[in-house]
Image (cartoon, rainbow, N blue to C red; front, side, top):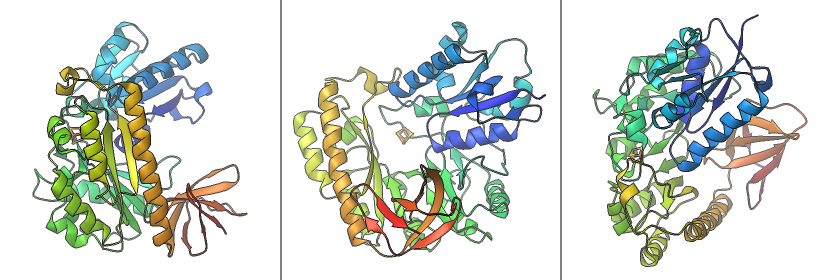
Length: 415
Ligand code: SF4
């Protein structure tokens, strides 16, 4: 009987890819989706916010109470919380992302271990499947060479480096050959792809689009300054989703400076409106409550955001990260005030999203991803969720949907 391994993955799509690499690297172990039957639990952690750290800690407490499994910590949290969790013997082993391909031999260690490895390694793993997924996450880049003043990521993922292009294309070819049609390009700062290898994300996508079986490419988060003419040339290609996530983080000029962001409000307005005019839905990241976000700067930000055609938003309240420049900045913003500001922002964008779906109410190209309580769920080309009632199991299928109802929260269809 092979020992059973359960994967608990927190955080971003890059972590989803990394967990799949680890799953593919297990020869002498069996992967289980049932946590209670696991002999080993791999905790692929995130540390981007305090909330992420406490989720990891509370998950470890949950396992300690309910399971006899050995816990191993990896992911970005290994670099920030690994040492204290190892010394307090709450985890059996800690290993950095560069060690993940050695997982089969690491788990055989009878001695407890703490191995962070090389922060600037370049991933060379290729996977043939995505367990339990109908779409494939393709890691193309890792690390970040930006230095936003609030962000811990460059310190736990290293500086930006690109994966080998031939390897990426081979990765897509294998997964397309195994039936995947939708590919999500992921990394820490994917717009930096190709900077050290005379390539670019636009030219990579053009090469990917020639691969048989590829139907749609989705992109992780881009930085405004990375969207250049070459990228704008391919933006209306049929294989690219009609949604982009471009990280603003704030819309107050002063706050962008304080956060050491490279984007500027004036050029952001121009960029977003140019892309929206081509029929795109547009999402962004926004940090609310960063130190220095006075009421006046918040009002400025809300006035400014009205000029940016946003339909999706990942809004976060600022989370102090030890070791970042922002951690020593003042004045801090009261948590209650941050929450109210985030709600104000979220409701504005929810209204924008509803209005967008009403004006972009043509044919929807949907990949059905999951089923819950008899209803199926998928996302269309604008990255809007649609709930579908169907008597048949349509998971993993592509559907062109013309007749649907536009509800406040999402679209709805009966097939
Ligand atoms: S671009 Fe800024 S926020 Fe994004 S990972 Fe890099 S440093 Fe962090």
